[in-house]
Length: 129
Image 1 (cartoon, rainbow, N blue to C red):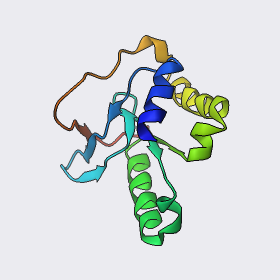
Image 2 (cartoon, rainbow, N blue to C red):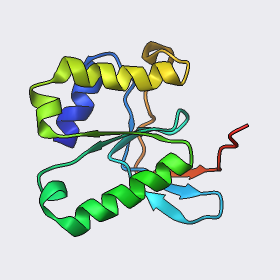
Image 3 (cartoon, rainbow, N blue to C red):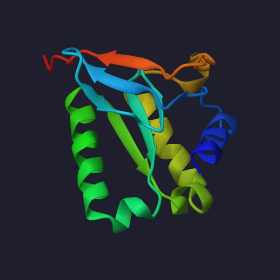
Image 4 (cartoon, one colour):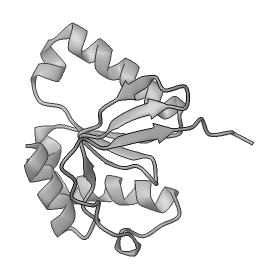
């Protein structure tokens, strides 16, 4: 489903996102591995399958990672099968709103580079001044 989601995003005019990047804070501590992201904008899209809902441990881990990304200034959009398969216009609007909130239009950005190794993203804390 992550591949389907990525292809639908690209077909909808979003730049191809980075897939499976490891996000670290500025102390070098691993924070998360979003399914899809645009690191320069600090936008992450997570696809959560059924196991994310039925496993209490998985859900607790997901929430902790999401909160840590948000603490670092990331916008995290969590999607489920229903969002991808049956509510695409609404889902597309949610992702577009994240870009708008960052002050950019999706068509202004290049696609993520195609790399052979897992991308590493270091995210310094954002000051909230």
